[in-house]
Length: 287
Image 1 (tube, rainbow, N blue to C red):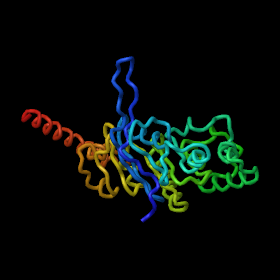
Image 2: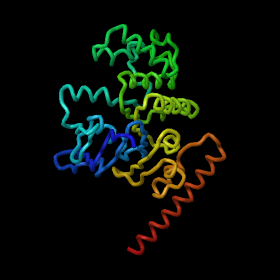
Image 3: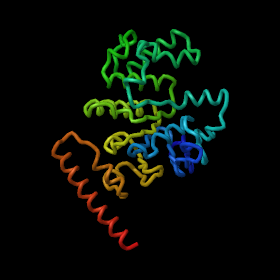
């Protein structure tokens, strides 16, 4: 079994309420999750479920009220100095929007070289690494001289992936990395994620609202709802036979290219919602 890379245990994240008497908002309610080296774990939920907050907590960008987040056996919150800088190399992120995550005034070459020069890599070594990164994400070599506006959304996201790979990270947090792309482009970018993982052994925490997406890239999946994980397991099991009603609704809401299959999914989802509403009403009457 591969080594344990990320270990999240009973993490609670609270944000202050509005005003002097505002009640704190608990975004995460005792969440536990683990990722092993070379593994992809999908974290799925609707907007406001807490999935992005968990990703931010792993990156040290959200306040952890209680619980622990350990990377390679070390508590993330207690790292300082050189150890903290090393963590910045080991954990990288790919953001949702390829149109805003890249500096529009920098060339692609400068964007990819920036994390390298910040680590005192020589110019020649940086140039060689940039060429290697462009090849890894299937972009032409002349991209080094071009600006982000000259590329499509899918190509820009490939640049963002290349930037995340620049320092040879062990874990990449992918925060809705294909949600801004059309379905055909999504498929190609997802294939690229899988190919990169097979070649480099990098681990992913793949954050998305779409169970259909994680079905293609993740080994395991955790489903979040209102700050809690309500279902988890092997991806093939969770997507083929979801047990929790929320997971069932998410699966039926996932878009598919076939219009007939999509219409059937919508009809199934409506029937499920009606059945669940009837069950809730019956339970309320009994109570």
